[in-house]
Amino acid sequence: MATRKAQKLPDDGARNGWYETLPPPPPAQRAEGAVTVDYAVVGAGIVGLTVARRLGELRPTDTAALIDAERVGYGTSGRNAGFLLKGHSHGGEKDLELGRRNDRLCAAGLEHLRDIVMRHQIQCDWSDWGRIYVAAGGPGETHLKHLADGLDGIGTAYSAVDQDAMEAVTGTRFYSQGIRADGTALVQPAALMRGLGSTLPENVSLYEESPVSEIHSDDGFRLICPEGEIAARQVVLANHIFAEELGVARSRVVPVALFASLTRPLTKDELALAGGGGEFGLLPASPNGSTVRLTRDGRILMRNTLVYGRAKRFDEAQLSEALANHREGIKRRWPDLADIELDGTWGGTLGFTRNGGVVFGEMAPGLHAVMTTDAAPLTRGATAGKLLAEQICGVDSALLQDMLALPKAALLPPDPFLKFIVNRRIRKAETAEAGEL
Ligand SMILES: Cc1cc2nc3c(=O)[nH]c(=O)nc-3n(C[C@H](O)[C@H](O)[C@H](O)COP(=O)(O)OP(=O)(O)OC[C@H]3O[C@@H](n4cnc5c(N)ncnc54)[C@H](O)[C@@H]3O)c2cc1C
Image (cartoon, rainbow, N blue to C red):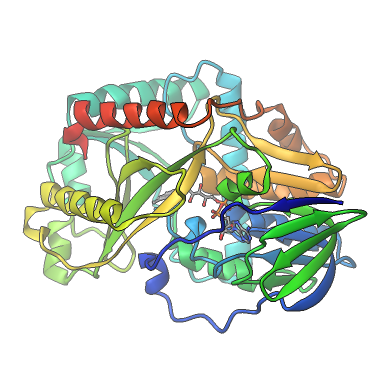
């Protein structure tokens, strides 16, 4: 019998501003006693939710358990900036076919999520506002030009937005330039995840507050949770950067922590300072820039500050630094809103690969893993989850072939080398592109 023991379990800390704006959820169903299912999916973020839904649909007479250590919507998938990207480019793609494949996967994920949201009337402030990539000065403009070249190469339509037009949208002259690409939705991410979790097929049971600390494999699998055990024929690890804690995809994914804050809803006068025209979504061209949204309910979301995330935890010093950076970001754009109350500052960890690669497929007999990394993780992750379920059930498609044609995530150097390299890159961007924050 083989045993995998989790070296570390999720703990996202005390705050998630998006989650806190929602009404409290009903009490969690925990994994208690002995449960037997056909499929066990570990991790109920965007990827696990889409794997479990599709397994339930394709195998209506089988049963599946979707298990999370926290509440659905509380983890990274519910603590991001809420951009459901139809495609993405970091610019300078050397392999244009790879860029096009990624865009097809993202676009399919966007439509898959749209279909579920519309069919189940999930209230998550879905809006097809799109996205504007922005620059605030020279360094950002260089990245923006690079990004535009990337979109040209892939064949994605976009239009230039000058400083006056940026001001008309946002009420600030902070941005010197932007480029607008349509086809992206903005959502309240915690609400979307909760909605996905509450509309799963009947043959899928959701277990929350049930961290899986061990997986035993011997003619099937036994997953150990604090109050019970789940026996399954097949297991899918959809637990993102925590897969390595169970011995899968080790040294393949760089964990990076990002931070965000949400203000209280702006008053009518305050909204006039922020463009007065309703919601918007801005993505920075510079790695040191800030993702900024004005939400449907009139809050400013500010997302900046990047740290190496191997700890998969956010300490007080990091949260204080992020809060100071978020305040600075608001002040630079809207000086009159510099002191506005924040309804939460929080961190989240996500994964990058060295080569734009993926973790997808069967890792050992009956043990599958799927991880969303790099660009557009929510939409590409939704597709990856759906496709993994289809692969398990023997359903082939052109999209699955696109997924299988992506490179596997390349091997990374171990810590402390990796930490050193990532920190050096972050510091370089912070110094050279400080004005983009
Ligand atoms: C601040 C911020 C902003 C971002 N903005 C965007 C954006 O606008 N658009 C975009 O596409 N992406 C964005 N991202 C990235 C995106 O949110 C993530 O890449 C994506 O949500 C990962 O999805 P996932 O399902 O793979 O993982 P997760 O959402 O991390 O889900 C994995 C789940 O597994 C659970 N888990 C882990 N280990 C165990 C265990 N042993 N037992 C039980 N459960 C376990 C965790 O609790 C977690 O809920 C952002 C991320 C951050 C932090």
